Amino acid sequence: MDNTGTPHESTVTSYAKAPTKAVTAEGVTYAYRELGLKGGIPVVFFVHLAATLDNWDPRIIDPIAKTRHVITFDQPGVGASTGQVPDNIEAMADDAYTFIKALGFKRIDVFSFSLGGMIAQDLALKHPDLVRKLVLTGTGPRGGKGIDKVVGTTYWNILRATLTRSDPKEFLFFNRNATGKPAAKAFIKRLQERTIDRDKPISTRAFQTQLKAIQAFGRSAPSDLSTLTHPTLIANGDNDRMVPSALSTDLHRRIKGSELFIYPDSGHGGIFQYHAKFAPAAVDFLAN
Image (cartoon, rainbow, N blue to C red; front, side, top):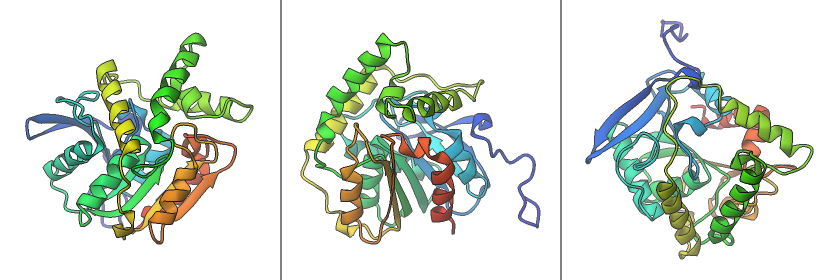
């Protein structure tokens, strides 16, 4: 960066071009990507069920990376990271903590989606001083009504997608209507913008273990989220069939002072369908 605060041309601000790196901690090699301006508090992205580094929408990441240091990573046993997927969310939060510490960060902002939001909640509860701001999208609280139904919903929609030779995310993340179908196709297309150095897809076994962990999270006693004093932004579509939209309202009620965005005529992937509205809102919220 020059002394005017303008990024050098060598600063990567496009997720499609962010190199994949690796760091080893406690016997696990974590695959990660970073982009944007280094220095200051980084924004660490926590991804969804079955997802790897290649599952982040560039229309969400790139606007944030214009002014912030952004990091995405694969949890152990996922994509290019070594190790095993744990069967519970608390252990996933411990792994995330290990990764963040391995990179030497003492303070982070968290951007999370779906399963990532469950992990983020546990991380913030366990290490409140590590997290400065929380973005929780398409997610719900521990013990949230309907979270444990995710297994049935997921398998049913994978079957529907297979029969129509579609990507399961078209069924799981978007409404199957005149608005949702084109939004789904556009989202899937954006995920293909990166053409080199793609991540390894998740294995069936790792995916099944993640599903088990989500189910257990849904069936657990609720966490006391009133202890979370972090500025928090919560967002979802109004018709989330994976993590019921009512749970976003529930999170908003439980986390004092949180902000809530519910996008109309959209599902689990509401933030991706409405990226043109949501990305600037997220940028504003995360601004120092």
